[in-house]
Picture 1: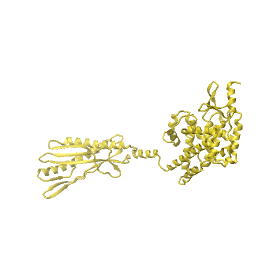
Picture 2: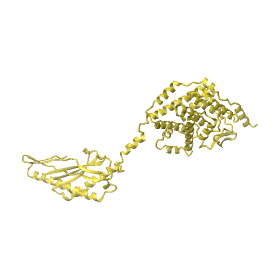
Picture 3: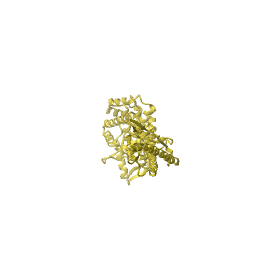
Picture 4: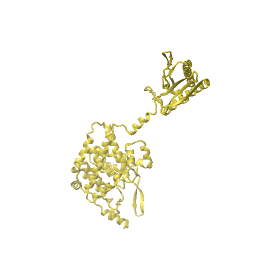
Length: 490
């Protein structure tokens, strides 16, 4: 007999069978006060729809399914990644793909395994060996091989899913000691014994945490499969919490250290340590689902961000920046046309100019808004020189449609409706021509300024200058003849 065969024989002989359920139950207990308090709070949420509750439990399932593979070292996760995938937040599929091409198939297989667990939980019959083998087949569906230690070192071997192990799978623990699992020839007998224990009246009457902890621990002690035993054990434990509270036990990868410590404590006879660990994780899961439900009727951050971003795109498909840019194009087009007219008509006796104005505070109607930029309007100024000295101003403000469609208008309106007065003896004579606003449709400015708009703005500019010079002429005449003038201009 070779040294390897001798070593396996020694390790097989060192296997310590799992305890009976009677022994387990006599040495463990559950803090039912905490359990009942946590579950009562969750169960009291009568304001929730079945769809909302189902979604919250789906999130718990995704937490459990994702991290069960990470605990085994099949891939790495962190808290943020697990949260993203479990809640299916934006780009979760991208983040999952970035972990490697094998991660998604493993995760989906584990998800399907938990679906199978839920199916088992809803059936009234006790757990069978066949069901456990199917559970192994489901949880390892995406895995074709596993690493095994041989006399010549680690090797990859084909994984037979849904069948008990054909080779010994004893391991070396974290502290360097050998740890024995059930020998190959004993495994079927031990699995039959475990199933019989889980069919006993005392087991079926026990608290779900006691059931989950016992089923999990005993399956790990046997280690009936070549690989995937931890994943099967965690899924099997969830059958009993699904039956009690309709949710799995969520054991995250960050719990790996206390999880392994509790299993080692149970190996040394401290079963209560593992029961306490499983209770803590069950309560974590209840709180996780409860927290998800608290926000069930609240908008998600993505929904809030989408709503805000939607304010920056109008019903016509224009961005608010495009609307602002179009308004400024109209304002500058108006200024250019005015400048042409001013240059043609001014000289030594008549001066004129235009300036863009900052900070105008005119209030538009509810369908329009002021531009984002400080340049919100245009000043037009004419003045005549002495001895017929007078001045006339106009201010135009830009009003932009709040939710611009192609047929909505950008407007140029008087920002100042000045009333100018001439003193005729003791009588004040008012001059207050009310200039009409100028409107340009969005489709006249986007994608390009239309030819018709350019003609219309030129006509409008001619009219405004004509009105202003007529007014200035009256004021200059009054000034030349010694009449007092009063101009209410900005």
